[in-house]
Amino acid sequence: MFSKEKISVTHVSYAVSKQTASYRLHNELKNFIDSNIFVSAKSISSTLIIQPSNFFEKITSKVGLIREIFYSKIYPHNNKSYFSYNVGPVFFQLLWLNKLFKLKSSIFHLHWIGNGFLNLNQIKKIKSPIVITLHDVWFITGGCHVNLACKKYETGCNQCPLFETTYNPFNITSRIFNKKLNIFKNKNIDLIVLSKWMKDIVSASPIFSNSNINLIPNGLNTDIFKPYDKKS
Image: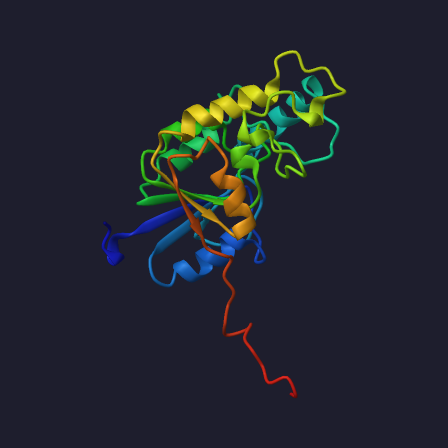
């Protein structure tokens, strides 16, 4: 267990604004513990948000997004659901991501890491305990962020309906699914889901069958959002 004074957390999120759940959580936590955010795209200006600041960092941090665009040309889907691959070569992108891996935090809290932001293989480099908040279903699927009515995340995402009318020689969704399975199944991870609906979905996923699933809805600032007298 960590003592309250020594806990530090790094939130990992593609980008944040004042409305982003990861930022709102960080904004409250920083009043009690050391909290910062590592992002890939331009976000709120803050000394506690680690973001690309010079030309070199801005270029290398975008390599993941460029790789995603390239993959979408090789493995095009029908666009019925937003899709992130997060696989492939990362050499130049590491020039930015290595800044993340050098951080000394008690906990790394992963939020939305799509658009090629954090390559799946690179998650292995995080040695501290990992917490993941699922803001959509991407972590348990072969790449889609919204599964619609599909339940293939329960059995391996083979022959994904997003690719049923397109060229998909290597069954990319099944490969991504199996990579997530190999990375997460035996890793010490605590999951946070935001609703009972999401908890039921994640509980059916083999990827996180050995993880703790915690139902914690997004928080609100109760100094602003609170019950008022109806007549008033």
